[in-house]
Amino acid sequence: MSLPKPLEAVLLDVGGVFHLPDHERIAGAMERAEVVIDAAELDRAHYAGVRGLTNFTEGDRSIWLAYIREYARALGAADQLDAVAEVLLNEFTTGGVWTRIIPGSRDALVAIKATGVKLAVVSNADGSVQAQLAADGICQMGPGPGVEMDAILDSSVVKVAKPDPRIFEIALEHLGGIDPSRAIHVGDTPAADCTGAQAANITPILIDPYNDHEDFQGLRTKSLQEVAQLVRVATQ
Image 1 (cartoon, rainbow, N blue to C red):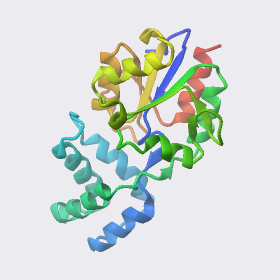
Image 2: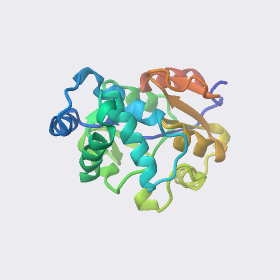
Image 3: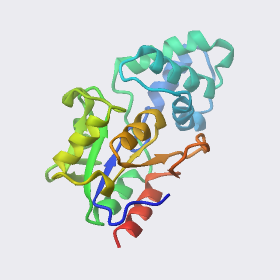
Image 4: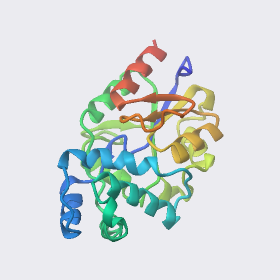
């Protein structure tokens, strides 16, 4: 499978694409749970958590708990999974955890912007994603320190969440009514990002840095940097 050509729009998730859970916050939670962790595994734990999401319904506590349990297991807490998962769940629901910027993601977005495609963020979030992206200098609406976006959609604001295809349709409307066959969506969660994009007739690209989804029938990349390279080719 290849990217649409000509490619006119790139939609992007946030978690797993630009942001990951903050190392200090998670390390502190695991210390309270009396689990010794390898800090080098903290980023990997997120993608292990995503691997546990065989289906997805935004707001369903059981889905969130499935992520947390696999996250805890990846950090070596298999022997006390329930107790550790409860500590982690409390930490995540406190808010402000998704603040670690994935290395290279900002530069990759700059490279994608340089190709001339329209850009939109499509995120299941709590209403704070636009402010967080701007504060981190990743992107914003209008001029600023980050990449200027054409649209930023936060599910809590638009009142529809992935995998509902309507959030993707709303994004394309904000981009001037671009045909979905000329767009891609980049995300790390097959059951939310890829299923939703496909339902909207948009080509999904799955960020899968640890080959957790080898059975995924579509495009997989290790990073947003690789996506930037693909976009460059598709827009030449």
